[in-house]
Amino acid sequence: MRRYGKHTDEDDVRVRPNRKGNRPRTSIRPKHEDAAEGFVLTVDRGRLTVLVEDRTIIAMKARELGRKGVVVGDRVAVVGDLSGAKDTLARIVRVEERSSVLRRTADDDDPFERVVVANADQLAIVTALADPEPRPRLIDRCLVAAFDAGLSPLLVLTKSDLAPAAPLLEAYGPLGVPYVVTNREELADGDAADRVRELLTDKVTVFFGHSGVGKTTLVNALVPEHKRATGRVNAVTGRGRHTTTSALALPLPDGDGWVIDTPGVRSFGLHHVDPARVIHAFPDLEPGTEGCPRACSHDEPDCALDQWVADGHADPARLYSLRRLLATRERREGD
Image (cartoon, rainbow, N blue to C red; front, top):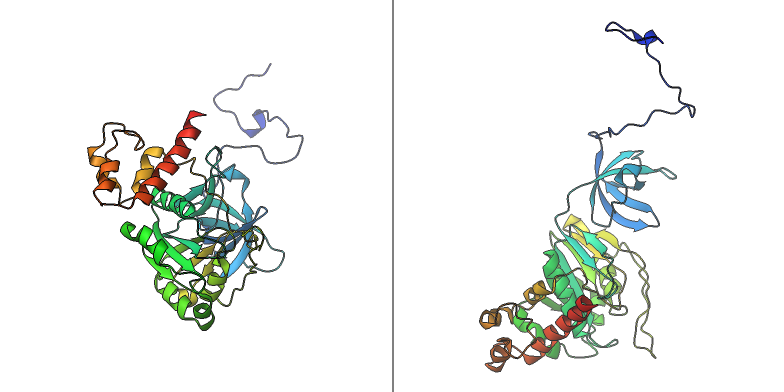
């Protein structure tokens, strides 16, 4: 058997032949330092539409990303054909660090988190005042998710021509959440869109709400050159149809910000939120917890919030909403 000495050359070294004829595997991955920067606009069945400079391209995840998900709003590094020409395909090789992540679960018993969008600054909670009726507890859940994700909430009330906004604003006034009230006539003449657009300037804003509240209609008014399909509310069930099937990021005119239209939802699970953080979504109630006993669940006889509300510092309906959320979370924790 031949042994190799100190002074071997290439002819002395045995190399196991590669039967497949491809390159040998290596754990060293390319750094892709020449990759272009991109912004994910939408995701559809594994294909991602990405904005690179002033053009849109179609891309797919590189195998090296593994199970790492890519969502609307992600800042990514892209290589390959970046021309944007028909039938071309680029590769996303890196997802940059996210500044914020908005998550939800299907319900409170669902352990699987779904990332809605990344890198947003603001969550616009769109609620109709009638047709369909407003759902305050869904609003509360969206507020919890917004505060947990570090997003600034914005309350957008639509269809004020069908019902007054005052009752809902009275309930959420103590929260100090910015709001805007719109109706169909104002959307038609552009006044409502202008007032909403002022609150979106220089921000990435996610529009979120259940089906039929007029969310996509409002987005179409804000970005008229990108019309999306809209639907009607079912007269029997009082629910809207899902006309928006995927999240889509759209630039505001003059590049003053971004709006992200999302599919309508009928529930907002908070499985991913620690119950101890839920109180942070109720700043009108949070100061009243200073007198609570240690590890207070805020739904027990010694809870200081009862006296806080009795003294007129907050609306009893807000405490009821908080406790309803906490009760839902506690049932999930006990399962």
